[in-house]
Amino acid sequence: MKLAEKAGADIVLLSYPSNFWPTTEQEIYDYTKAFCDATSLAVMLFPIPLWGFERVHPMGMSVELIGRLIADCPNVVAVKSEQGFPLISGLMEMYHHYRDQVIISCPIEGDCIPLMSLMDLQFSGTSYTQWMGDYFPKAFQLAREGKWEEAMKLYWQVQPARLASGGATAAYMPGVNFINRTNWKYMDWLAGFNGGPLRAPTPRMPDRFMGSLRAGLKASGCPVTDLPDSEFMKGLLARPCQAGSMPPKAIANGPIWTRASRSAVTPNSTMSTASPLKPSKTSATAGVTNSYLAHPAAGSCPSLIEP
Image (cartoon, rainbow, N blue to C red):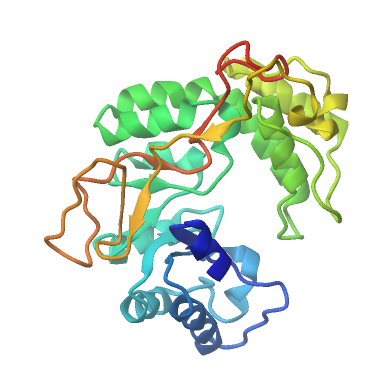
């Protein structure tokens, strides 16, 4: 964490190691608080069934536990709420209790846009929505601006890609509580990101899922590479680019997390300081992580697709 602080990181999404096996809620609290106390970074709590905390409480990380951590850890600024996944019950309860104290994130793209007809969501992340091009930042911003019906038109446009991704995930996720990151990286590669191998050990990517994911993007009208799947493991940046070309860079309008107001604001926006522990609903804009990556300009690198 100290290296991340020195490198200029703003916020950390807190996970738990696979050998962490709590049997009481107090153990989860102690581990989490010790982490928060040890860093100056803002912290996003991440309650999700992946950790196996349901042996302690049916919700995994209960309403009371989250409330204690928010109260006792000033640098807890957000909750990526997936208790009870794939149901939305945990998200709804976190929003009900704590939306005026921290940012409540709905990271599930398929839930987020529909729920924004009822919920004032300021941020969605982290997830893998970048594989569908710029759809999600556009739809999220439209919903934030009150143009929810327009956002839903974009939502249904990418339904084939959503179904393809859900089908691939459903094939490997149940019973293992483990995300196939090769699957996610292949999805990104289809959209023009680098691809290439992950460090071992890593799961493989079956051909049948590659075909369905590619077809889903095409049917949704999203950008998709025409390179053969055999190129995926090589990585795009290993291919020769034209002189002067550059790899994708993160653009500069992603959210800045502030511990003083527990809100996500974008550069050049005015942050409200009227309530030091309440998210600023006026200054927060569409914070959608993993989607703020720009492709190179058209023609700069023949192996990368246009936006």
